[in-house]
Length: 121
Image (cartoon, rainbow, N blue to C red; front, top):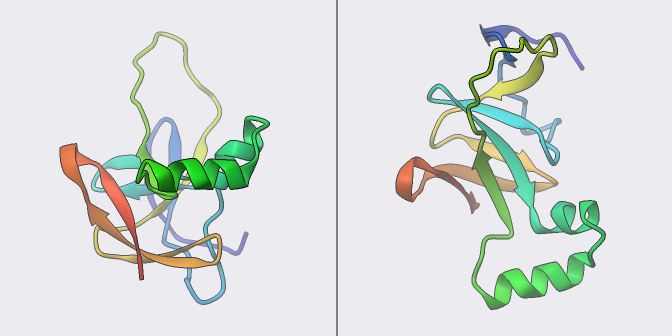
């Protein structure tokens, strides 16, 4: 990873400035830091491969039920007594930003219930 400026740091995450869409795309399980929350990229293909399923069947199922093929999932917050020494990496973004994920370009937009969605550009 190239040297990047750290824009936020807490007990569980280190947040770097956003990636450059021209040269550097986000990958499955990369995290974004938006409005104080952490979101993880996901897609039908990566999910299917990780769970031993056929990606093409997963795509057909998502299209049949009109589910998104690419998404941002809000990370849950867990309170516990044990201290986690491992710090995860995230990248800063804002609603309305354009991001590149798996070679496709999306705009991050608000969705229902304080969620976010990826809209194909």
